[in-house]
Length: 294
Image (cartoon, rainbow, N blue to C red; front, side, top):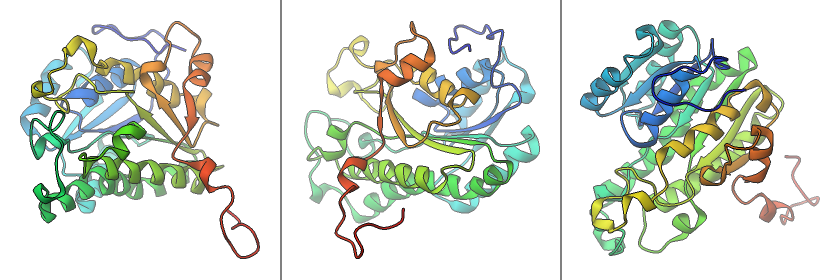
């Protein structure tokens, strides 16, 4: 299996040939890297973002790949109708839908650019801003999953990958609404993995493993950009999770920074795999009869 990529050279094996992926927040950061990675593996990609100018630049930068393999759409993932339309467009124009990468999110920078060095207090967060974070960072992933799941279940093949964050960030004081929304997405990922188990549709989580060199970490944070997690680390675990070899892998989280591309993928996967969410805390519920069926 080929999980490396570089420049505009295509991997010879192209293990995702014939597959179609939706990638959200595709115009920059992780999304831009992932679009290129999926295209390099032979997949067709529907690149979604609210940034129309960024999508135009993405098209220009991906000219080394077949034009018919990339569909760019200005989509607000907080709008279920827009997500359903994007799913329909991907199926109609790219010939199907097999993979969803729920990467779309608002960062704390929309509240204040120095949030990494000066915590954001609850009184700074207007109710409308809280609702917007929930709508994008959590409901956006649900919207796309809900819009696509019928098709994936019918074809008995699907890969859903959700980008959450470290547990530290989820629980960090002064990092709301971002942290709680990502915690909710993590929990939803685990629940969906159980719901879809045995159907051919898998659900997993991939996180960078620390502050990343994207616009989510503004210059005001004071970090040396070279010391941050580089966006390219997100691609190898995601590409492997979308392969046929990973068809039995579901309900896990992967720290991309810990993925060792020098190892065979099956070994690299085991080395950085943990269960998604907090499954170990859910084994002894107080429940009539002892425990629910699922």
